[in-house]
Image (tube, rainbow, N blue to C red; front, side, top):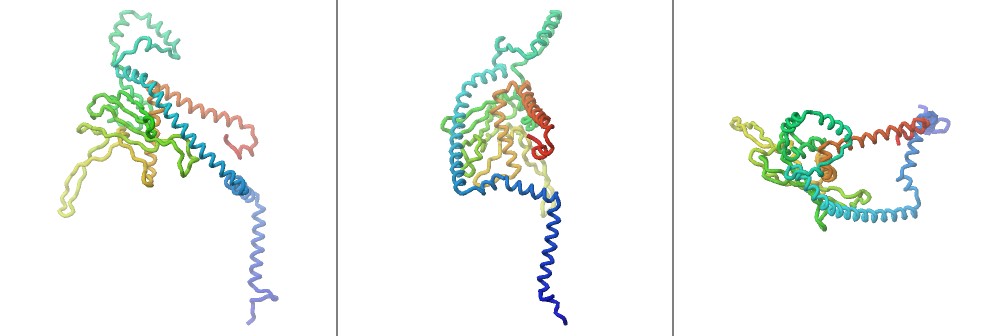
Length: 375
């Protein structure tokens, strides 16, 4: 039998390898002649070469050493910034004391304990001319009819349902309020913000003051938000100022049968041996704004919260911050809706500006538009 392992003195394996190499080279030449493939490869090379981390890796060791020194300076800057925010907190506490007499008078007007004077009630609106014309028309009405209308016009005490109206007007709050919460919130008379005392860990307390009611015996419900204003040792460059890190609620002393945070359900149980069935009742959690005072606790001891719990806690922190920064200081404007309209107009303005910028770019070359379609 003839030996086919050699051909003209060359091993067949070597011939096969040379043939495969030739085919691979031809295939490579064909691929590299494809402009789409070349463009894709160039894009990947461009991306790799222009990433900051890849650039840093190419620098000499001496330069990297200096960069590390800059990072140390940046950490020191973060600690100075933390001190700055601590002093800001001290200023907030100082000015909160100056605001409080005005907020106390606001509460008296809302509850009707004090009636504002004519000077305190004077306000020139933007529609003053229209109001003046309306007043001229009204002045022509028969005096007798005016007296009757005045006599029939209701004059409730204070400003009814002031805080409850704010809850209805603000989407972030109205989403939390259930129908059975509403009659309770109508008894809310004031919301206050109290800052932590000097020398104490940074925090603030929201106080919800209620008039006597049929639902609970507490006159004040509290929510405490604990804050941190120092760079994280593991990630100091992430520091952007004080952040809420945890919160505590309070115990609500519900009157019998009035707890809206739980509901009673009936459940059937079957005895395993005898097969008999019995009906039991049990209490389960119920959606309510008043769960706001029984918050989740931030994770501790290295344990992590699940995604839903993290979202719930983040939403709680956002609501607490909104009460402190917006609702309490500007309550009347959320009652009238003016603050909400201002917020909406601001958002629309941002969109309008973006559209205008896009319009200014219409004259650019197509290549530029592909690289940077938006500013």
